[in-house]
Length: 185
Ligand code: HEM
Ligand code: HEM
Image (cartoon, rainbow, N blue to C red; front, side, top):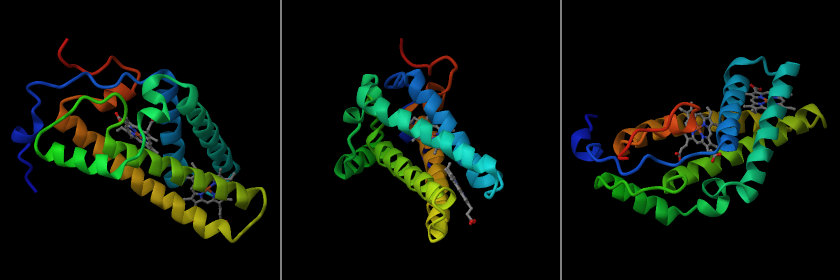
């Protein structure tokens, strides 16, 4: 599994400093990530805390969806429409060592982002169905969707680490509250 990273990385000339995510994107991202990890892996599922954490995730998701309509350019849905053909083309480019500059999520990341938001919406909706409307049939759907979401999140984390290494742009730092990624001035 040894990757010829020297030939793929192209890191001698980082193409850009990456996207400058606004505070709404960053805050909603980390609160959603924390809620999913807590509820999916740590918090007792029958506890009141589980429900409240789930509601916080819902509030963040709603805020992010609103921001996707009225927010900054890079955060708007119109800046990152899902496209399988663009994702495939982008993946092929990566294998050839190409790292085109991105104005928002890259075309592969886009598919992952929508999949995670979709799974989260199902998890929260079924959680509310279980807790508020006592529809016990939703238990399995809630569990399967939650596990799928955790799996997607794992793939997502691997993806951002890999993409950061290949492109030489520190995507993770750009999503945190620290100084932005290095790159050519
Ligand atoms: C961040 C979002 C959430 C995640 C990742 C999540 C994840 C999970 C997981 C993994 C389970 C265990 C399933 C099992 O083993 O049976 C569970 C159970 C449960 N969740 Fe959530 N959940 C979330 C949001 C919510 C919300 C918003 C509610 C309700 C307001 C909720 C209500 C419940 C209930 C009532 C159970 C117990 C089901 C049962 O076994 O009877 N969840 N959740
Ligand atoms: C575990 C739960 C996680 C979930 C559900 C999750 C979900 C998401 C979502 C939905 C986005 C899109 C953000 C937006 O446009 O508002 C995103 C972006 C991002 N996430 Fe996560 N994330 C998680 C954990 C992490 C972790 C642990 C890291 C860092 C190691 C991370 C790094 C990033 C980065 C760098 C981006 C921006 C990618 C880009 O530049 O296109 N995420 N994540």
